Length: 469
Ligand code: FRU
Image (cartoon, rainbow, N blue to C red):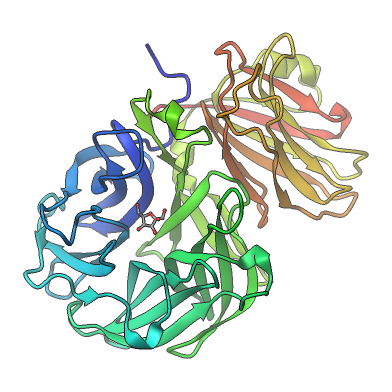
């Protein structure tokens, strides 16, 4: 039986569980992506590095597992997140973490297709947290880059009862590492709780003269634990990063642990894990769990804030496009005739609004379920309201509304770009307001689209059917 929740044009593991994307790299003319993968079950644990390869960043071919779990004490919790870099000796190098003991380990490949990996004979290359960086509870997720002829590495750290940090190291050979200090850290205890949490999966690079530090912050003191991705931009003196701007990267509840590919033509392409928004006991009955966002191009706006948009490569997946403009007919009827659950939808409104405006997707004919994507200008919010996404009682499926600040002048035009792919929703606005989440309608017949707000204000709508990858 086909699975109505399995995305068709977003990356999913062939079977089993996935979480973080790991080590994206362009190698011998192709794109490689690795990911945290439990091939045997649809729950977290038993973590391998899954592997996929692509020529175009959107269509992926599954490859055999790149890093399995050696039968030793070091790897008893599996092979955790890390990065992949091209070394000067012509090899590709993966630096990954282990947990309990917390270490960084090294593996190398010289294959054109990165199939076979040889672990460094003297693993781990870093064992435990340096004395100078204590106290800290976590220490994981190396991210490496070249700087002034050396290798640098940022590692996620922090204490569950205080704040998060990214630790900075340097090396000449990816094997011997020297601790340099704290690259960045979260607010002190008692500071803004919004920013509280240990830092996982740091990413750090420069766009023009501005440095970008992205961390996945996990706060287990909130109930339920809060996992959110923070984007900071600012300056860097070679040891210390000073943020000028701090914001969330994506305000949805499914988005976590992004990773980045820096392309030769200077683009920064981000993927993140889109977790399931249903409980793991539902997951036990599944064939797969977890998927990735579309590739997103990340850039800075004039205020140094991080803005993401779907990579232009995604447009290759459009198979059939229909456009509504004033004159084409009545919009509500036009939308009604264009139902679907594997679509890209572009919606533009004129300025001069009155109230909330948006689109309901996955709407049932009888109104029993729908998911509302709404811009509420009075509250300055972009919302995905899931309170009616699933008819009936299903406590294990998330139904909270997710929202992102989107302050516009009362008369500003608005552009929404919505990617709906079975259970995946990604919404972009061309600004920092970006939302991704998951929905699980009860009925496969709930495929309708319904305009929210007055149709006179709508300037144009394009609906693209999307190819499966
Ligand atoms: C983030 C994370 C990383 C860790 C990995 C383990 O989701 O917790 O910190 O390396 O997942 O799967």
